[in-house]
Amino acid sequence: MSPPLSVLIADDELVARKRLSRLLTAFPDVSVCGEAADGEAVLAAVRAGGVDVVLLDIHMPGLSGMDALALLPAGGPHVILVTAHADHAVEAFEHGAVDYVLKPVEASRLQKALERVRVRLAARAPEPGKGSAIEQLARPLARLPIPTRQGIVLVDPGTISHATLEDELVTVFTSQGDFLTDFTLQELVDRLPPEGFYRVHRRALVNLAHVTRLEPLETGGYLARTARGHTVEVSRQSARELRRMLGLRRGTEDESGA
Image 1 (tube, helix red, strand yellow):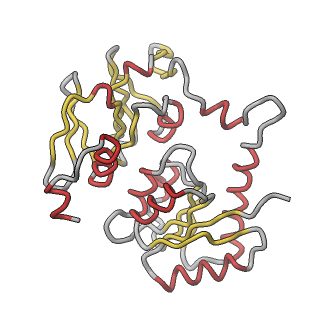
Image 2 (tube, helix red, strand yellow):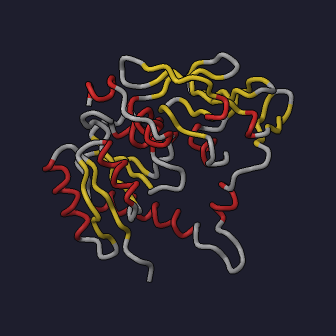
């Protein structure tokens, strides 16, 4: 018998959290590991570990659910969006959400979403002597294949400076040139080496090895400048993560807005 799913409930409304908790207690194979009222609390809970699934609301104060989803680490918990708004589904799935459940949540619909999570988790179970199918597919590649009109370009990940999403298409910027790809940003994160590559915005990831300067913005984020002269916006939350990672003290612009 598989262990129970450890579920984090994230919603800024106490009533909504209580309803989800009540629904989950009816499932024998699920345990509630905690609750969060905003996106930053979600990221903190995920960093602490022990979370298999996040039931994530979209509209929350400060860091929204979509912001939090975009900033979750590769290989982190599975996410089920639980919201009253149907207009973010495409973006949610683009960022790797397992399911998109509309409020008011029915027990049968929630159970179906959790079953989808179990299917994904089962795919991770390795065969004797082998890694799981997901691990084999998601393992960082020595060359990243990018389909183009002229053929498939095999790109050395180390030459990639950044990638951005615009008009539903992702552009990968490299020292060999710039390439449009059908990969989503989350798929790129899963395929690139974890060292050096960071999701800094819902619409961008960067390779810090190519960043020459981080210029502070009034929003509390940064403008990252690459060696080739490109600029990439770093969100406020990602700026905080970068400061922690680089061992920098919080800037006065961050303290004033915290």
